[in-house]
Amino acid sequence: MTDDVHVSVAELHLASELAGGDTRAASADIAEYALWLGDDALILSQQLGAWISRAPELEEDVALGNIALDLLGHARSLLRYAGSWDGRTEDDLAYFRDEPEFRCAWIVQQPNGDFAQTIARQLVASTYMYELYSALRGSTDETFAAIAAKSLKEVDYHRDHAVQWVLRLAGGTVLSREKMIRALADVWPYVDELFRDEPLIDRLDGVAARPSTLHPGFDAVIDTVFAEAELVRPDAKASRAGGRHGSHATPFGHLLAEMQVLARRHPGATW
Image (tube, rainbow, N blue to C red):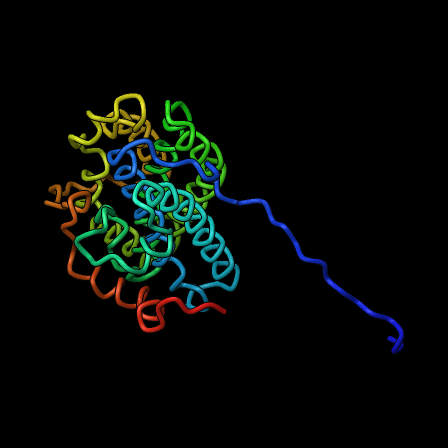
């Protein structure tokens, strides 16, 4: 390159990647529901990000990293919408809330464990999210409908990725099958919480997706996968999970500490 060649980059004006734009949440209940969904996506994203450079295959480093980024995008949209009610930013909600203020379900809080454990959690979470966003496309709240329409395409891939790994592990070696069976048994007590019809849902008729109505679609997918993998649905007693009310499992505090430490140590920092 000769000295008389100059390269410059003009200022870029990027359109917001967040579905829903700058719309303000219509009520405190709508903001609370956005927290439910946003916190699920945020915490699951944080969990999957821990697999980068640790997955069993290089391709899985990329795949799990991409799924984590998709979920982070969903979380940003939903937390931005939730914070619009009282003037908080997505970063305020992610980094400066304490444990009881989070509304994520216990399933996303479960430790990564081994790879089979993560895949079992992904099977449940992505299958649930697919049914959730499918239903939310018909929400009377335009922002939820827009977020759902965008997120559904990505969750479809997340679900397929989890299904393929369940089949691969269940149909692999004796050890991989044992680990898959054990992992499903470990996560199954936390499935029930996803489908509970909390009082908030009654107050958001037509806006929120009623969790109990998502169960048949979830069951149909799970039954098909288990039949192909020759697995039996775990006979597990439902946990007393209370994530939607701010009651969380013990590992959640450690996860939050790791996720929030930099922002809390250097509040207001930019780079």
